[in-house]
Image (cartoon, rainbow, N blue to C red; front, side, top):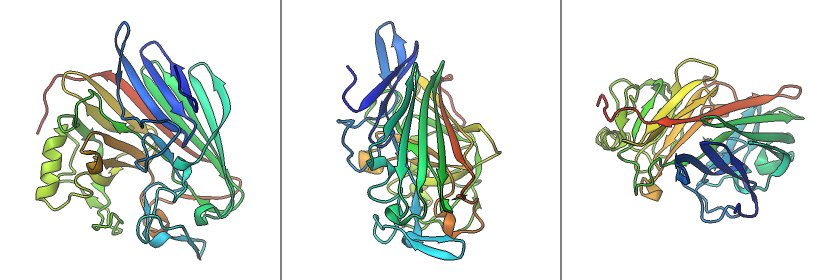
Length: 322
């Protein structure tokens, strides 16, 4: 039975449960037998309550961190609510992940949720009208965000699922590849320095599939570990809707993450004991304070859109180019 506050999308081989709190992907499952399903993401104990880990939630208005909570827009500084020391994280507290969304439309294999964020919410200018549409496909799930504002503002929405494809205690044996030749280095506070650096020669070179165990060990050895492992923004090659990352569990299945976002955040959730890997297509962190980064500004009369797709299939043969 679907618990109160959530909506179930059921397909032949894929099914999902969408939580109204935080417009969250509460469950994503793949069929592994006639009456057997495998969870592909970690879920909260109660879909109606958050615990601060953003399980499957929609993140907004600004995903990731904003240094000092300072938002530079059209020559004016707006002070956002700090919620990680002096910095602003994932839209503040409460951010979009903490708010109840309303069902705007519900159909077979599809649900559209709506949220109105008022002018001044968490310090952001402009009233933002946001829709999150979740649609089952034959082989996965498609998420589309749409937003408009009545004043110039900033928007960088993403989804924050933690993938664990086989139910093991950790995902260190999962194999990861990312189509990125560059990344945005950060300090220990996870705030970008402003540099866009090459991944070549670093543990962040994931263009060939590598077990996470090796990547995490190399990050530590190279002094690149953040939050106990991966917590990095990689700049995805190309533009438009394209593959960002591919995660597979040996002998099980794989998930291909596709998006039109310029970058993807990888977070190995050290505070959860590496039980899952968050793969979050996004704009660059702290973009309003770095003119050299792609803009996240949204102006009246324009629309913000973001597409994220999860494609589920059988895992490739158990080999890698480590």
